[in-house]
Length: 503
Ligand SMILES: [Zn+2]
Image (cartoon, rainbow, N blue to C red; front, side, top):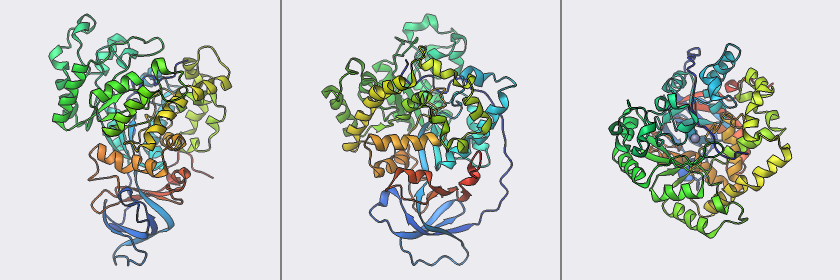
């Protein structure tokens, strides 16, 4: 069994798609009224009120029921619902298709190409369907996929970390055949100890931490992604970034104003990440190494978690990385009623076919019974990450909402829906509903320096808003009770975002 996040968005197809242009005129001024305004910086005042949008910005926030609408505004009644800022998922991989092998995605044959094209066309809408209006892609491997996403008629805002910075031949480069891996990871870090296994056209001076971080900056990145991962399964004992390299990345990231992120899901890796003074740890800690079988949090892990709290290191728990693998052993998973709303019918049919379940064998070569596999996840890595997250929640660590969708070629991480499942995981692990809400709004906005634009309902910010029937401070399922999503001031009903509309 391989309990780990596998190849991240590696080998991807270039599928051009363009939907019809959105011609519907949007009123210049919209007055959203009869709503409870839930904005993360002001949760002490949960008053009925109104919000005025002008073009694509929020221009006025009235926290009293009696405020009069401006004469020339179109009035939209929220009918007593709850208005929240658009949600932010700060860890996605837009080019990877859930459940689809990277090789197939890279070279789709005639039988699969339409299914993949449909998926990419629906992708921006699926994130919006669950209220996500801002996404951060952590590892750009095919710039064209992001460009197409940004040209879709209706889509979340997307920021990215540019091509990521693995150490030469380390994770996740190691999953790509040697002939292609250097092209797919052009900002890899040169390791002089490996000069014999790096093609001669790649010069050490072009792959220093400073050069690779500068390349990300030039490409418009807002963050840099590094890795500390010794590997798993067939890919063990991989080279890892050295403390000196990490310090140089840290220095270059600071100079360029970029957020430094590190893939780290083990005790050893998160210790390395904190020592390296990273801004964000991109996973929860489910791998405790020699301490894996300890039933309670070991003291040495608690000590590290205290440092994560004190340094305010951003923490993306990504529990659904594990939930997404476990899904292959849960006969109920593909029956979830939300799936037809985020995934086109042809791809769901394929998920249910024997061919569409190929990844199950990758997770479990021995054909272990489902119940035993579920128990393995629940008693092993899921238990450990929950203990870690619960400990951090009590101490109010700096949680950042990030799902790692999809974290592997698994159909257990579907766009939009996976965010909703991750929220449930976080709440079950001990985060309060307020912590979940802040992680997915203002915490992400501040960490990634987007808070002048998004993350709260305040005048001057982009009018990315979500109207809910229920309060997300009372139950997680409020996030699945969405009425309307505003993207840059343009309202769209939730039903019209679905891949297959509800009956
Ligand atoms: Zn990831």
